[in-house]
Amino acid sequence: MKWEEVRKMYSEKWILFEALEAHSESGKRVIDDLSVVNVFERGNDALKEYAEKHKKDKNREVYVYSTKNKELCIEERSWIGVRKNG
Image (cartoon, rainbow, N blue to C red):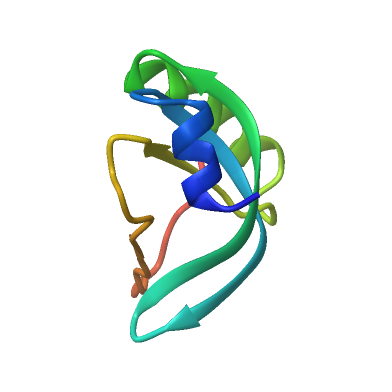
């Protein structure tokens, strides 16, 4: 599914989605195809479910985004340093 389709189907909502096809370009993650996992009225609820899904499987490329945004713009972040699991 394309972002434009998601915006039409779920106007003014928060979307938890998985990137099915994506690539990196100029420091941004470009999502070519996505699958909607869940739809929310509130961003906090979407972030809670995101945290649960990410904790179970860190290899899945899942995101939370609002359909108020015309463009799907996800900046890539580089993590530098040591992270302690605990």
